[in-house]
Image 1 (spheres, rainbow, N blue to C red):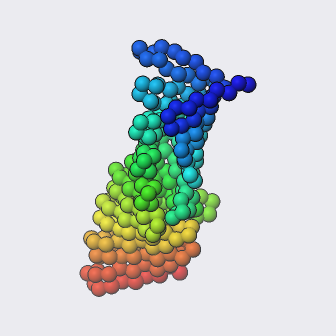
Image 2: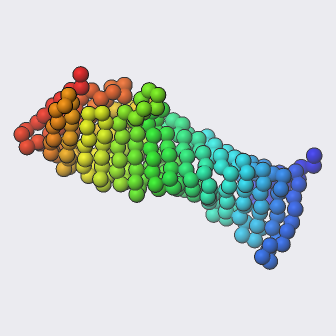
Image 3: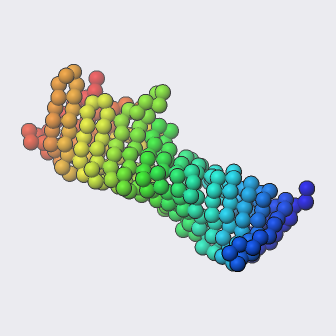
Length: 268
């Protein structure tokens, strides 16, 4: 097999064969049998590719694999603008990402854009495995790799899983911020927390994750609690309520500034 090697400015491209076609008044380079691209700190592999020298846009298709530092991305369709160093993945993709400041992340999405210079990933209909037993779902998600920060908006849900992939508790909100360094998140807008005991609604909440699961959830502001146990139901309105977990199990919940003072209950 003859391997063609191209040196195009700041990257090297290898391909078994190449073809040239005229399309819309432009000369497009085709790589029908696949390519390998090496550009600074990034490696790219695909079974098929097209390159437009005029716009410097690379179109990749079929078993696309992108390697960068400790990140590995898989997709079947990708578009790379060499001038702006921005990626677009219009179809489903799977990303395994890690850095010195955080453990491995597993990210899935239906559509995404990635800016190599700013190290910012934008994705739609995303699913992120924050911890072994904690997953985040979001309509639109932005991940800032340089600052280890996540922003999710429009609709967000965090699910905490137990054995046999059973959901132990979940938190829904309109927008969410998450700090990977501190393993801490802040939820805002129509916040709704649900577990086997009951439901809590509010406008603001924070949560802390530990090694594998949720450590604590705190609501601040106007909070409504609906609690059921042994056919008894308690409804409260307070300004703060906190849930503490141990080994992924709810142990203590307490509220402050309730109409009747302060309440406390413990799971047996």
